[in-house]
Length: 376
Image 1 (spheres, helix red, strand yellow):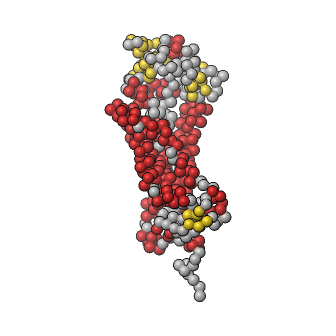
Image 2: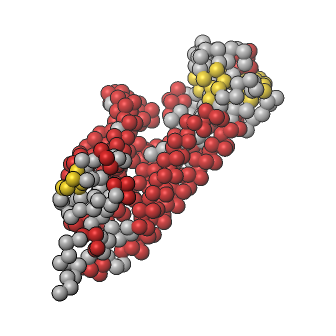
Image 3: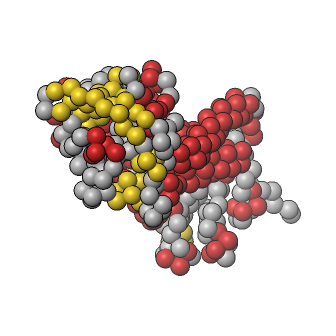
């Protein structure tokens, strides 16, 4: 007598067959999910293109030696300059540059450039430097020892002997194009990886609700978390600064469920991976606290009343960047270090029998029945 699939002891024969009841219930859902997937993919693609454009556009700044404080044109700098009422002259002033010869020194405050006030919006400062070339003259107004002064600053050629960094006398490293590529390229790589992986998982498991949630978290976090740190973001509309800046840090909260989502959709066959899937709610606490601290710490620049709370939670911002990396250890555990094979016992995994992504590396021996633990 021939056994049907429900009677066979080999779960791999029916490994990707969805339940018929789910197929009838969710028949119309993939079209909506496809639209959402395409939308978020388009948004993240825009982020990737915008970041790439920023890297090439920023190469024009600075292309002239001014001796003025550097300003990368991103929203991390903007709030501090707005609160100061201008561009502070810090100890990065080039002692041999045009600004020093004009009379600017540490402690001065640049309040206008070419007649454009910087007391409430520092954008003209960056825009002017971006569009200037050696030989151009800039009318600078600054406050020194309580007195308002002005003068004509003539830009010079940037020294060609410093191709990777412009180290000024006070020890401040003035980033060059090469350094900015090194600083921003990890963000670009993350965005591209999030885009490709999100589209791959999205189309591969369009009917899987857990996979769809994972893809949504992956694409949104990839889009928002680095938005405020993009060069030239200060040139975006002013009304967009607050919402995007807030979302950029608040979106960190989705990164915890995102990593746990990887374990849920493509489970790691380790005991620790099994525990993480059972304790998924801990990620909301950990990453939620990180997002709250990082957001308050950054919002303190916008709203001075949040200063004490921001200062108290500043440790979450300075130390939090490495937290998500801990989950990568579980995602890429080599097969020979995995003493037990595990397959999630949730209804979704029991139905689909989802195989481990690392199955080919372990000889195809770790596709097991739902909820069981067997040696690999």
